[in-house]
Amino acid sequence: MRRSALLLLGMLLVLTGCSSVPRERPPVQPPADPAALAGVTLRVGDQKGGSQSLLRAAGLLDTPYRLQWSTFTAGPPLIEAARAGAIDVGQTGNTPAIFAAAARARVQLISASQGNVTSDAILVAPDAPIRDVAGLRGKRIAVGKGTSAHGQLLYTLRAAGLTLDDVDLTYLQPSDAYAAFRQGQVDAWATWDPYTAQAQLETGARVLADGEGTANGYSFLVASNAALADPAHQAALADFTQRLREAMRYSDTHRDQRAETWAQETKLPLPVTRLAASRGPDLPVPLDDRLVRSQQDLADAFTEAGVIPGRVGFADFVDRRFEDRS
Image 1 (cartoon, rainbow, N blue to C red):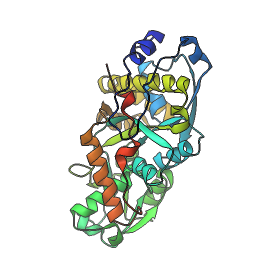
Image 2: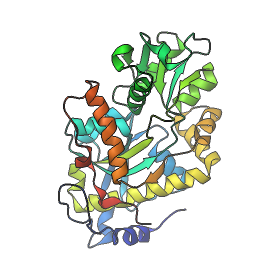
Image 3: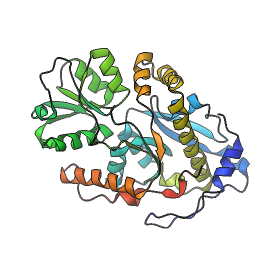
Image 4: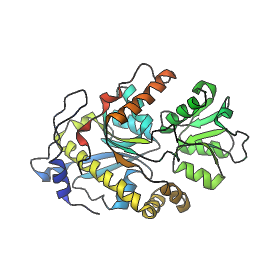
């Protein structure tokens, strides 16, 4: 599965500039001298077991440019790093992308993927008296602020006739949330894989509700405006984006290998990563109007809930020049 530099040139030559996003953007062009990519360092934000793990499992880490990795606990701090210029690109979920747009962050969404939503779960202890979502009224729920779990929780509560104001939210990063959940300091935990799988196998956590019928399962590759403004970095981003798509497809057909690499990099037990991998990876999807409408609906829901001030124009942060042409 290892690709040569020909992958880069062949794919870049078809990235010509037809973009339906509001602002004009010149097409992505391959560098006049392909050797110029050797001088590029692409700073990539990641979460444990994320993009780097996917690329390693697929044998796609050998790039014609240098990769510098930074690890984050969740999407919101990764977005903040991109906004501050500390990274060039990184993968994040549906809700952090909305919060970035709401903050007018100097970033663009250059690629999209969609995963299973059964692992986007609201968990309770196996012996918890809460039997349905309505039973969460007045209960303390751990969730990462601005994470995909935050959006899934908002939608799940709304489907049950509740709002975020009807519950007691405790904003915690995943490791702290898991500790609070295990110790009974919260009544429920809204999270995602591999944390869902870990809690299920290690604590017998019960899934009160998952994302079926509520979550859209989208994730995005987010690039900083600074990186997008540089032709050499644009070329590296185009290649990286295509490699990540190929790695996602590879992991879908090699789930055992994906689980083993995931376990090695995160130090999670192999049964945990096997369960998470069995539910399927994110797979590439187009940055089309259907996706934009779904994300706009979620953004509007956050506005209506009073979490985000004002209306977010999600389409303004979509850059379709890097779409999959394979």
